[in-house]
Image 1 (cartoon, rainbow, N blue to C red):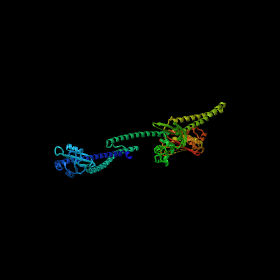
Image 2: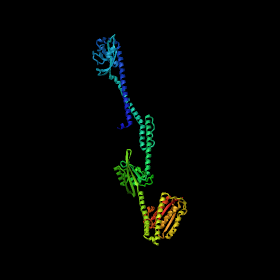
Image 3: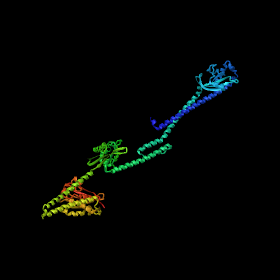
Image 4: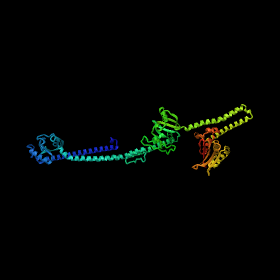
Length: 627
């Protein structure tokens, strides 16, 4: 069956069959023509010999056979003599067709042969010739007859005959030679057909190999035009097809790159699944959110479905991914079921609900300390359908919501105390204290204090809002570090002296100028130093220091105290507006100072942070850019 599937073997067999048929036909024609030519030559010879014998003087005189009437012993002698001389059977006949003598006694005497074709032809025309079956020979024989006219009418006839076998015998060697030559020609022709078939298919095999290489997108897959017009047309068509495939592959690659770029720019994790729930595409955010479980095949001894293991390494193109994330997320998760990719069953259940109902499904849950919102959407694109699974990190949104709730709670708490005091003072004055010369001024002073506290709170809120919205103008200029540090510290020096607290300034020598708004930085410094004084006991020390960082691009300013410190659970929220620790609430204040300081430093392009150990002190630091 392989021979019939292979085109080159089909060509070889067809050419071999045609060559064999041609050799057979030519051999048969040659042997047939040779046989016919031999028969004609022998027949002409027999006719010539018979006519020659008919002119023999003895026969024409009739003396040898007594005028064809007497004892025919002499005629038998002549027939046998001539038979040996001419290597043929000789028969003498009278004019009426009766046999007078036969050289081989195959024809009985007095037998009448007048109905034989050669006899009739000789009687009619002088000579006759026929190839027919002979009862005497029991096979085909060639007969030639000639009339012997002693006068106007023939006195008799001479007939010569030879069996067909004696004519064909000399041709047997020729037939064997022809068959041998035919076999040799068939072998040579088959070898030529084999060479032609393989030579004809060589460019097509090259074309087939290059066509298979197009699957792997290898270089140099163009085909030379070739020497034949047909293959030239095919090669040109193939090259056009390759060019179109390259263009189409380029368009697909560009479309895929655009899709990948869009997915990579999304802040949400995206899984694109086929109808069976197998991952077709995912972005780096989704890879990071599902964690190591998504790449189990790349971090263990397991192998991909194709049979090749995947090595574990950090992706150089995605620095946000940890060492647990493989360098090529698509190559690791593509083709896997979603249940094999993600480690949280709730994501799979959300997709399953979408798959079962054909409607979008949604769920929100905690995963690895983050609040994750999962949305599964069905989609249909052309003849294919599938699902899009979105993973949204809602942690920051929930944190902001918590901050908003805390802000409302804190501002309500901060406003409740002065408002309650104002209400109580107002009711007291209305109940008669207004007429008391001694109590009335004291209550009015209390009211004025609470109103000032409210005004300060509103002013700070307004200022914070303006800073956050960018409405506060900053006047940046290169200023010495000492200018932004010493002025607020000197203003607070009397307060430190009253509290018996040492306020120490430690500035590194030869500090570069910083690019800052000095007045705004004074506000930050005053807030940090005032807080340090407020939460430090008597006899404590506060150190205000400044020095360059390792890069030489920033100056770090720090305020260190040995006060009560900040609990670990409050450090991340200490810069939120109105946020206070329990100890800070007892000391008063609006709770907006650190929030304002944070936004001022961020407007300068710097950072602010706190290092603190509870009951041992705190160190607030911020950076300013070198001018």
